[in-house]
Length: 490
Image (cartoon, rainbow, N blue to C red; front, side, top):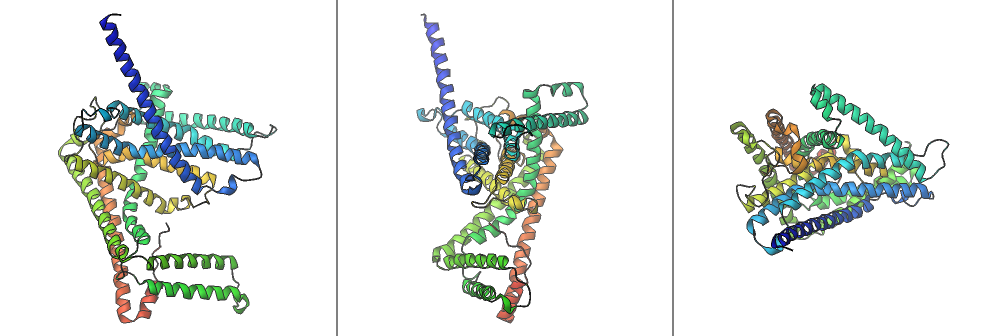
């Protein structure tokens, strides 16, 4: 063989090894996410649904659980996409010629973005509807009972749903863009229809994040206050323990002597209240035994971190609004031939990139807290070892919609300068200046409104209770009992 043939062969071998390496890395990453999600869902599922006397129902639930695990793994991968890309870019900038990080390149990052986009489409459009119809199916009338009969019914229902959604999207596209070329492009199922449908779902997810994230930012303070031990100056644990013990004793006496009261008693409700009070008393005793470091240092530091992160989020959005008004180059767009490892995505370098990653994770956690705190989705919240299969499917769908919209949400708010990679940059509405500007303005306004309302309400309640205690301790207890603000349950 000639020298040119050897060079061509070596290039082919290099490309082959790079492709194999990318496949192995992607498989290992997804397998890790899948195992973590399987462990999480195992702790939330209802064991009675998987140990029933009917083996058919148990098999159906196990198959649906595996599909939900796959969907939740894709959702977790979508959350990690943007932070992983930002950190990878900074590593490539810091160590451009290091031999041990040659596996971390732009081709791998682009491949991960495309895989998440593909699996998100697959999960939202096919797997989750299949899992729901599969758990609800019983087989066609007159057919032989079994898992296969349920599969046939589920496939038929899924085909009918696909035709319905396809027709609705086609009609909506024809109404919005009355153009023959746009209508004919919908016939291209893989290249246009699925990305167009996913763009609509992502837009709904971005709107959902617009509502849930400001609510979650305001609720993070109360949730953190419930989880951490407050200093002695902010709460009186001894008083709370005495009140809890008195209430528990009164309810126990009422249960033991049900004939002493002329009103009809709901014994089941009384037992649930006693169990709730016992759980509350155990938690209060644990908080009383907490060390001085946890009481006096942990709570202030956590609140300070929340204040800093919330302030940085609002400040970043405000700066991005000014950039949009001054220069339209700040508009989000798709990746146009640029590669990773060339320039930092933050004006502050590596430190700014770390801040961006922390803000992205913080906003995602806040959006989940706000989602489950909203009255509309309160009943969807999963419970430990007591979550039905249909409820798990609903949670996985909602979390996938939120997480797949996170890259678009972060880029629209200007949290990072990294342009969307892969098919995420094909969303046409991202290039609309009015949509992006109004979205940023609405997010800043809603966040400010929620924070001001939360802090003013909390400060007002504490001042009223403090003045009541100054008058008489009994007045403080009366004010505390008359408080109508709902307590978040997490």
